[in-house]
Image (cartoon, rainbow over all chains, first blue to last red; front, side):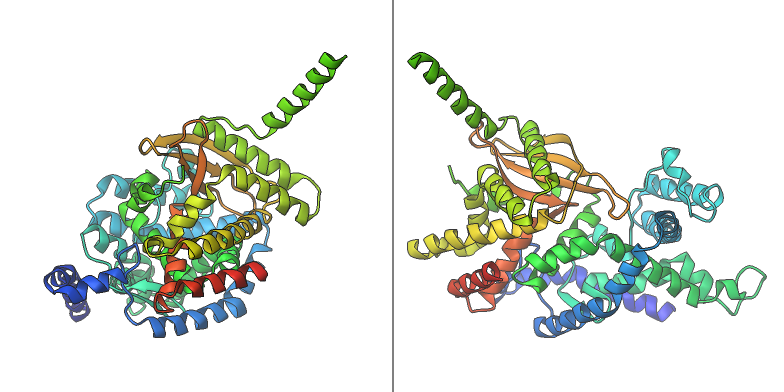
Length: 272
Length: 197
């Protein structure tokens, strides 16, 4: 585990230096910048990513979308309860990242929500914390934390099954495993102290909860995905744009959307 | 009698004018656009009727030409007059098709216009909420309203949960042109295919 951690830190440092290195090279990099999209993120290996994107799209149509549709046919209280319970467990990963980002106000909010919803809210099925004024402040992950620390996103690529990512976010995926208390509890199945290590806490439960979260998310976004698929002239490029915009917003944690929509291009356009 | 006729004609004319007159206050303007779209969508008419009505509304309330220029990104600087004419013509058709198909999926949208944020003299962001249903979660929708002409605000972008539709479109257009070695006519072919499907 220590080795993995050192390896991850090494990569983070490498990423943080990459923008400096890019600035030091000559005109070749300037021409490269022109091929970047507006989010300033270059492609790692576009041809491979486009193939992976097609594969994922086919997989989504064959498996994920039908499952999400099936899930959506369940009664609303069941779906809402399941979604709440999964979000409640997921908030532990958010809590770890709130702390790493030094955002102790949000950490307090996340911890308070978890305690209230796990107890009064019956294992997170209900969300009494919101009624008590502790609103859900959004999810955090290790990719966002690295972004908040100033780590450059690195180049963009598409992973099989897991979908769009950047070098920073893919490292974040590994970091999430270390930081997610749910994984740490279910992973240590060799420790049998009556709480940790019995069958209820075995590792497969971690994957169940992660899968349930994905299904819940997909079910909530069936129409949005369909709309993008139907209306895009280059679905790969549209998905990349949406992914990068979304990550930028998540890292900025901005309440004001205008802050993340600064776009000088609009100022040049005068149609009067 | 002549006077009466004139008054009736004038009255009818002013009524017709008022149907299409929107407020110059950006927040009120968006409220009116939302209300108009809702009226069209809840009417139990055919999809074709709804599409036509929504297209007419978009032509009055969206700065389609502005969005077209924006979507071209850096390529708008090198385009010839002839290409620009063809592009604007194709873009309008593409935009209306895309716009109406997105909206006709919503049978009775409940949108609450919440507040405004002035960006500068040319832009105001109007914030609204698409109210959650049993099937869909609540969605934040921000409208980038172009206010250079204060008497005639126009919509230039929709930002859904922080994701700009215009920027996404611009990057898709850029990708099509770039993957064809900067040949803008390949974008025209792609747009024609989209319009025809």
